[in-house]
Length: 306
Image 1 (cartoon, helix red, strand yellow):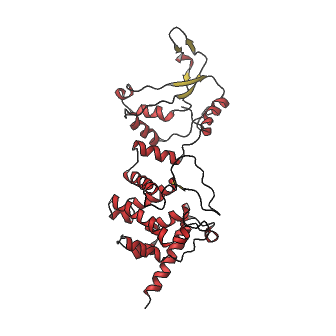
Image 2 (image 1 turned 45 degrees about the vertical axis):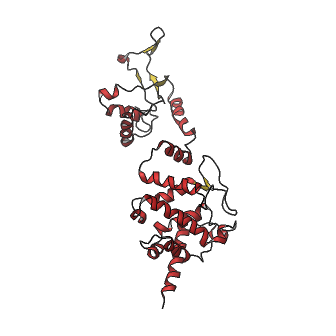
Image 3 (image 1 turned 120 degrees about the vertical axis):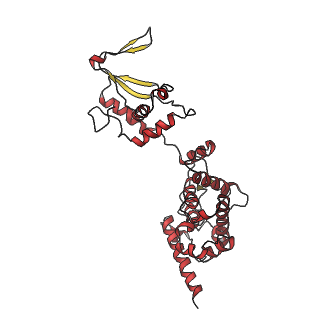
């Protein structure tokens, strides 16, 4: 294996042992098939192809060898297995012969031209296979699906689940659809191990998030229906949901009472929040959460004054 920067003939990326260990674990899974070939080059002058036996012959004394130009982590993973485990696996090698370094480097860099896996497609396929890193990821995506399908959800059919669907810029107009990937990231925080919602069961957390979305559409009814406000944009929806984890004042108001009445109380303290496009044009979700938190804090303090 010749790595770029470590060897004058190197084209490989830096080696990551953790990646190789994960591959070795996957190699023990009989349901995983390794279809992509290892790529390399036949280095040396003695390589010959024998058409009768369909084999390549070489002379080790002459210094002939095969480079591993793409596949070093698979090679390292195989070395981590014992002989019996390796004997159950086979890999195809696709090789060139004595190519120049520049052409080998160019072949390796072609990987950059691959179209990356769309984030929404990745989530949908993980859901189909049930291949989640943990239960929190699974739970979060199921809530996203519920928000998009439940007849009582204000976000029904507004969440973009399919790959490569472009959302228009939300600067001036109400966007068509909310990115499922961004919404998933927000809900993942709400159901995670460090979330205050962990005192609830998974079904209760799902109900609470549904209630929060319904209440935001009710507390700000006029803004929810308006194209001149950003409440129904991805930033607006994510900002309201993140009050559960990122707003100290909202948490003080709600406490451990996650009833519908309590959540409504917390949101109504921010009822005066200005959702106009002009007031939120350049604000990030974090900035909007901060401003919502300040609004809740001010109004809560006013109500507590004698």
